[in-house]
Amino acid sequence: MGGSVNRLNHNAGNFKTDYNYIRGADFETANPSETPYKMNGLKIWIIS
Image (cartoon, rainbow, N blue to C red; front, top):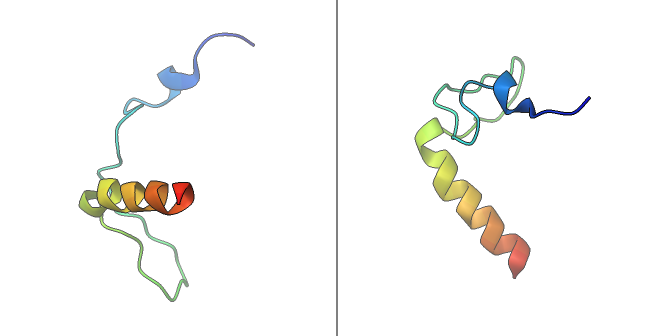
């Protein structure tokens, strides 16, 4: 194997800019602009 898989993702290391859509889901996913804030909250929740 070897090598880096970062080349498989043109946006590696960055947050998504597209909306998520889950067909049939009864909840809404976070907007791309909300993701960094929510991920930081998750990190704080895990640490505490």
